[in-house]
Image (cartoon, rainbow, N blue to C red):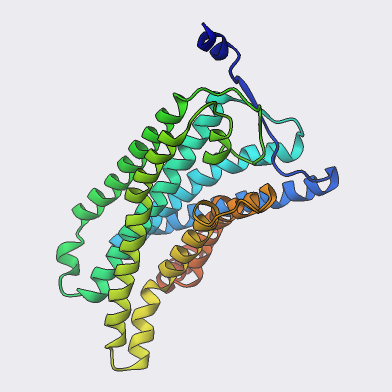
Length: 314
């Protein structure tokens, strides 16, 4: 009877605080986020368009890059529209189900990015360390199998997380001091013991986060060792340039992710946690297309040809 009454008084609506700025600063921040959203969508759509448009980019590496662009678009679309709304409206209320749904799609995209970056590091390992076998191993069929596996695994693991979380009993407080429905803020609303949920997340996190991370490290250890054996400096620079963009993206992604989820932050304010979260939810999807576009000659050449063809029809 007590449990029944507790369920009846459970959380229905949640107040998300977002960033607590003055009204004038909120307007400035709104336009910064709006510009960020616009540039992120345009930049990632440009990469997808270039890879689809040019036959010279129909290779596993660019196929994986285009999939990463898709995940970045979905990630920032899951986060930024609500964040923009929060900067205009002080009282931001969402239902518990909507909050958990946002967390689900956020988890899907974060897991997917980890897996895609791992697949891309394996692709670079084969291209540099096993060049004679690259075309035989990394063929069209294997590329699709790896990408589909990444997507399916992301949706399944995130669904397991979400189902487990949704079975918890939530009884308050009714406020989330964050700008989106992340894991810790949601668990902070739960009544009773959440250790089983955290244990499940830990074990699944080892599969989709820790193992991929060490796979990337091992791949690049082999890549760096192989590059170091190239006699000429020019040759080393040329080979390393083919994977430098990916290495930069991996570094930015994991450093920002670990700063929130792996580094102890008990002494930090929620404002610092929000700032760190901004790095991998808002900034990283913007930086990825910029890094790949600026540091990749093939993408720049195809973009130049696309612009020239467009101007000819004018």
